[in-house]
Image (cartoon, rainbow, N blue to C red; front, side, top):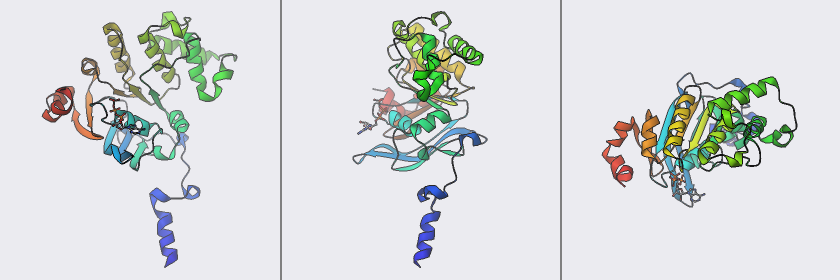
Length: 278
Ligand SMILES: Nc1ncnc2c1ncn2[C@@H]1O[C@H](COP(=O)(O)OP(=O)(O)OP(=O)(O)O)[C@@H](O)[C@H]1O
């Protein structure tokens, strides 16, 4: 019954050959009718036998602002690495909407499909003006070097103007990015992500090193962006998390320890023990 075994092998969803897999098309659109825009199910990532993510199951709703907290080494960055295609899990599932299987997409495809990530350290082009940074971001990774010489369309200009306003850098458009304050650089980088009009923004420790005033403005910005985008913020600063959080997920040892409002998770004895009580 060799043919039967072969047929069974071919029919397994996780082992289907590329040629018989239905093509993944972003143009098919994101299906978020059931609520979530991101689905992580039983995701496990091991490094030399150590489980950085341990059967992690987590859902992010379309348009929500979610804060992810947890002690060092809880798996927060690894979770973002899985979502953005930097790290492949040992097993589990990761879906963008109901139709796009993130585990079958590479980093560029995932970014193009609408998942943008801001790393902790700003990576703007310091020798270019703020508007040029936004222009480069609009061109995407492929057209970066040809973009600067090209003439911008009216829509392109409007888009840059609206993003400049959105990130509060309307007055600083012609400054060199390298001259901006730390907070302004972070907002510019968020603006660069916005130029790609992502559906999901993953933001890693946005307020590290910011002044209180900059933190307040960042809180306003991220809160404003939610709704139009789904925003996932990883942050250690509890005061900041409290100022923006509606729903908080606490990760611990690669899995969800608690989830709920800030008040709920802060009064959860397990969360106090492993994280807040530190
Ligand atoms: N490439 C790697 N090789 C080996 N171990 C890794 C690798 N990446 C992460 N780890 C380990 O996996 C665990 C989870 O790391 P991760 O960076 O995801 O945690 P985190 O919650 O983001 O921590 P932090 O708050 O310190 O940024 C840690 O113990 C880390 O040392």
